[in-house]
Length: 404
Ligand code: BGC
Image (cartoon, rainbow, N blue to C red):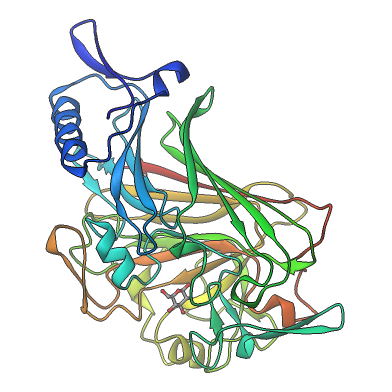
């Protein structure tokens, strides 16, 4: 079941050639679990790591499609598990300043958790990350209607968005690292959106402790596209406490203010002198309960920051996050114009996640890089319309680290 495993110079090193990726699949979850355990034990016992990718079954989706998990490991021992269901980052284990490894993302131990009810833990969100007002937009003179799954608006692609489909998934190894490439065809009219959309998302883990996410899409009819990843971070590890002590910096001079239903007013709001100014690193909890109407609407932070780019195109830094007790850091770089900073204000302790941890109010934070919310209805915002013949291409990088 394991992609490859071979002893080298007395230590266990894992697959390092693409040829070795060819694997025989078994359908038995029990075998997979046993194999996974063996590999985990070998990894734990080993003091030497090499980059590897291996695949194993991860249950069956409600429509009967088998789901797989892809485990990517780099030479520093950073390990992430990606599901073909929703393209979900199910776990991400990374060392703190003393070398203690912990899982820094929220999620579930098994597929059932994700299927039952997940607030988009770790998932690829599409076709449209964030809200579209009243689930309606007009494009080229025609009005389209979407599901109102977050009354009175449409949120994150509708009832069955890209977070709930099983993607076709293939592991790969390249000069830049190990990874998995996910593809999905969303049919014309899917969740009310026009056009057949062919989406491709790749995750690559490299030896600089970066997870590089490339998003691509093409369409046969004009349609809005705004893909993102909805990981909930808790750099303290294992989602055991709230994220208010994390220190955050976002190089942005403005946010997109919203109304009480979290739909943009269409204006920009300068952050200077407000609790939204994260241009200098600031503990998230320092001002989150301030008396500011935007914080009331969001029940905390739940807004898009407009990343300062000057004339820079390409990848720029969108956020720097540091957790003081462990020293773990996360830097996010993106080609996108905005980052939605959401402080888990709708987590309420009703979700029991990995290892039985109860995810309470503000136990995880999301930093979703994307275009601005409700862009199809906001003429002043950069366009999110993809047309036939064009290729949608964006990149976001999660870089993990630890400081003393
Ligand atoms: C949104 C929140 C929403 C959450 C759902 C975030 O991207 O900004 O308003 O509640 O996703 O999990």
